[in-house]
Amino acid sequence: MSRDSSKYGGRISVTEILSAVNLSNFDGIDPRVVAAAADRGQEVHEWATIVDAGVEVPHDDIDPRVSGCIRAYESFLAEVEPKLLASERVVINEEWEYAGTLDRVFKMKRRYEDGTEKNVKVVVDLKCPVKASKSWRLQTAGYAMAYGRKKVKEFDRATLQIMPNKQYKLLYWDNGADYNTFLAAVRVARFMGEV
Image (cartoon, rainbow, N blue to C red; front, side):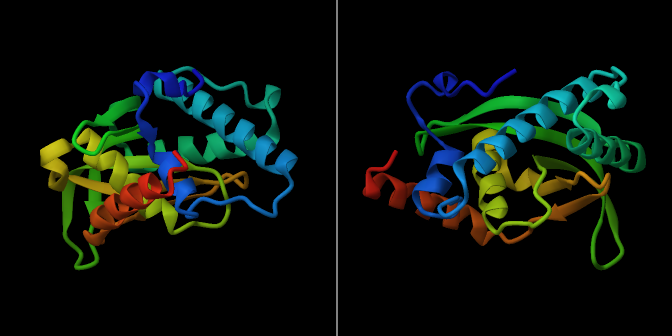
């Protein structure tokens, strides 16, 4: 289930855009560490898809860091009880000529700061790092604009931070300016000619 960028028909990817404008930069980090983290993230995504299919995960047989992240994902599913609408879906924004693979779209109950609750559709990106990144807001904005197209306002956006210690955080991104900021990143990436 590797993320095959050839599915994007030559379009730049959301990840490439963020990297080109230095919002997702791993300079100064040992390339072996970056590669190992990427492999672990890919494995977590594969196991999460298996969990979504209702298959039991053999936790004792997989890397404990991966298992911890999957246990966090399982906890999220058990506690929040979201309805899966889309998983590992290639999305394309024809107008801006970019694409990507969004992780999940869920329909789920969301509690707002004012105490109200509402069932909403949420574009969710799965992440394993312990420290959150501002680029996650823009990544979900890019996916939402490609998935939701003209109905982007019908979707909330969030990052599900699933950690090796079996904990999770659901981080909602409510800043509407993220959409324009992501489109600015698309323009800059094209200007820089790096993608």
